Amino acid sequence: MATKQPYIFLSHSTKDRDFSEWLADKLRKAEFDVWVDVDSIPDGSTWPREIEKAVTDCAAMVVVMSKSGRESEWVERETLLAMDLRKPLFIAKVDDTPLPLHLINRQFTDFRAKWEIPAQKLIRVLRGIPLEKPFETTRQPENLSPEPNERNIFKYLAKLPGGRQNELIARDLYSWASKHADSVTFGGKLTPAFHARVRAGKSDVGEITVFSLWAYPQQPAVQVNFLYFAAIPPYDNERLRLSTLKSLNELLPQGEQLNQNKTERRPTLALSLLSTADKLETFKDLMGEIMDNLRSEE
Image 1 (spheres, rainbow, N blue to C red):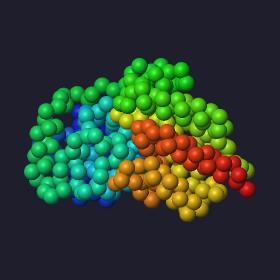
Image 2 (image 1 turned 60 degrees about the vertical axis):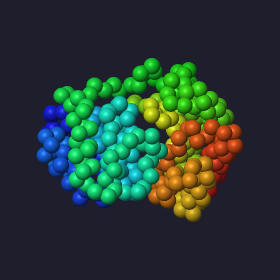
Image 3 (image 1 turned 135 degrees about the horizontal axis):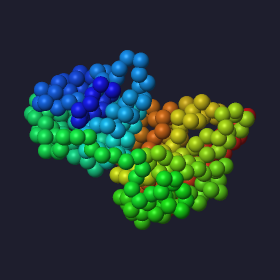
Image 4 (image 1 turned 180 degrees about the vertical axis):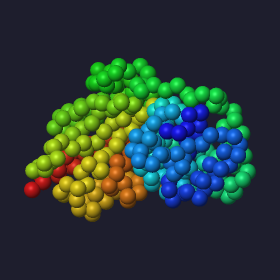
């Protein structure tokens, strides 16, 4: 990657390119070095690898948040990686779309009405953090051995936001998955997780991850992997996926419902949303239904 000096990573949807290029220009005029994918990835490079390296090496991230940004899987991946690496993260909010779950408790700079004045405010904030060198990062979260497993991941969860409550929810989901899934595996290079997997009927794709539980430092969460089973009967039927997504949305607060495009992605729910017995049982029933449907493939 060409950029060698400390720099700010600008995360954005391509649909917000006009604003993103304007903001990048403002930041550069303020003497910040800025990494933007359309400008900074060399020809012939592997796109995901370059983006991962750029997030890992950046000194801070500014995420352009809009309806398009919220729906962008790349923006979600970039911001979650930045949070896992404990990068300073700033939000430029450009429309009325609610912030996604993993950013909901963070302050934002409001660009909805005007651009110039908020840009100056953001620049002042950025000048208040040390950018002399990239922030040091670690590939493993603190207080966890290199290999996440059932003996350490729950103790680790207890130290994150939500503490004891999230630990108990995670233990319950693990116990349930151990009985109902074909296998439960642990992993995660940056964020520890466990994955509930089943083998779908006569499918030749092997075991499929139905859901994962991720120990994100800011907000532990469960992730339902539509991305993995959307092409396998009966979930190749969009109507069934939409019905399943509707059931997931019933667990979410008003205004935080998942967009329909999540039926081919990996929608994520805060673990704390399953803190009541009825919601936790509803989630397990829904995951059990998915597992049964996948196993009954003809």
